[in-house]
Image 1 (tube, rainbow, N blue to C red):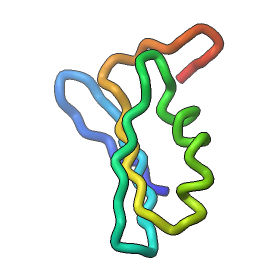
Image 2: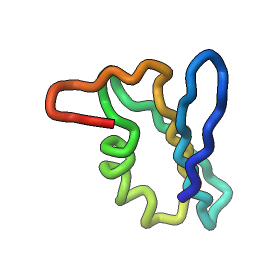
Image 3: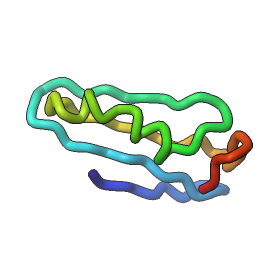
Image 4: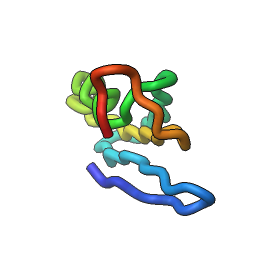
Length: 68
């Protein structure tokens, strides 16, 4: 897993898991969800060897009980 940072007016994170296949999925999390928590739900896809790209939303608002 690689986490890349892109600087615009704010800093955001992107999780990239380079897979062993030619398929790549861009996964977008819902409003208020932490990107690391969302990525943890994708374990089944990660095991298939597919490439996963999981960008974080630009606002760092999280639902109650989440942090980041």
